[in-house]
Length: 125
Image (cartoon, rainbow, N blue to C red; front, side):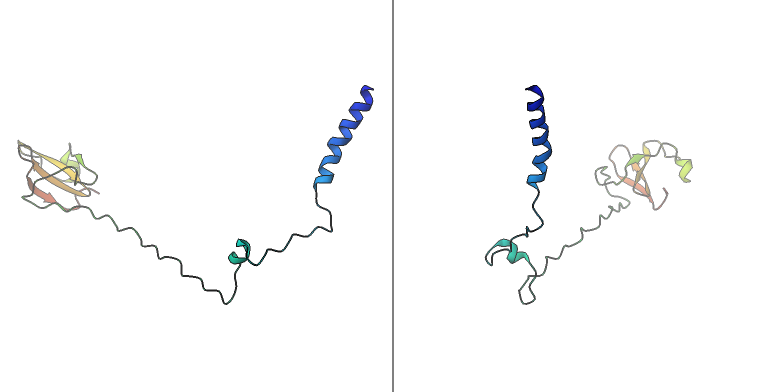
């Protein structure tokens, strides 16, 4: 009895995929005229609107600091304090001033009121 049940279970597991596959005479059905598949197919005389033009994002322009302006580190790109100005061929900062980097520029900033005393363009490479 046990062998008969195992044989039936094995044959059903093997036969199931065979019945699930479509036969060689099976053809897919054609879409109806009003169906969405028919609308999406390309037709030579059908009006199709042009795809929307995508604008490129505007290029980010770094803020150009000028002498006499107040320095805000939020506006500075790639901000950092220059601790060793000799590496960039800059004179040591006088007392009460410090060199800072904004992008590729070096700025001499007064510590008491954050006013820019000097700007050296393209000092940092």
